[in-house]
Length: 202
Image 1 (tube, rainbow, N blue to C red):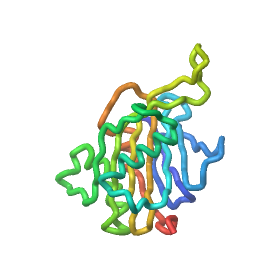
Image 2: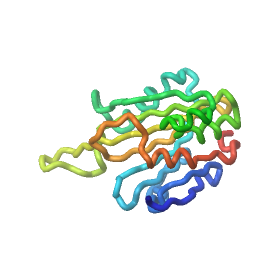
Image 3: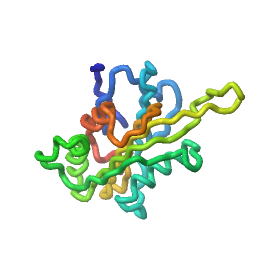
């Protein structure tokens, strides 16, 4: 198993655990103030993780949040019709009991729910998994057209209604294999995720 490291995000207001060889993208290019971006610098997985602070979407119900934010990412990635597939999604709004922790999805979000419900019992999270076909950087085919690659997208949407914030963790990695379950990388990120300072959200 690859070694891991603790990472402080947004000046230490948020903490998480990442593989030790992942790098802070802001050291090589500009990243928006509302984002923290890390990537696998060894290119073994081509994975990229984005933690993003967004204004709370009052008009989006929890049951619709996965489709809304997955679609918003697809638009940002320039996906056309049929290029974005949401394979699975689930809303978690109750604390996970010890009897349910062994279930894969319940175990993954146990730490997240415990973290966000310290601020308000109304807070919930949504897990979404799917794939999108995107243009990869400046890669081109022999015909001179932009090369496309299908990426696996895993998303955790923390709906923090009490601080009017939607906090997103998105993990993307090239993959040709469809899957509805979360990866080990995403599971490890969520299990070590912690909000240390709620004043980050105003």
